[in-house]
Image (spheres, helix red, strand yellow):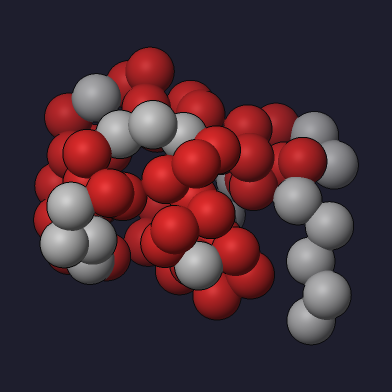
Length: 70
């Protein structure tokens, strides 16, 4: 999968898919950011990720690396 394959996907859909696949606890272990650790939610995580390019990149990279089962 390449970065081009993210084209057309929203950050919300990427994050939702990752949460469904890994769960919040596993995401927090893979990407050490507070919005995944302390009272995680899609809404709070999106707010942080939209303001923080390095964290968004980590989420996008994880999405590209993930082998989804569904």
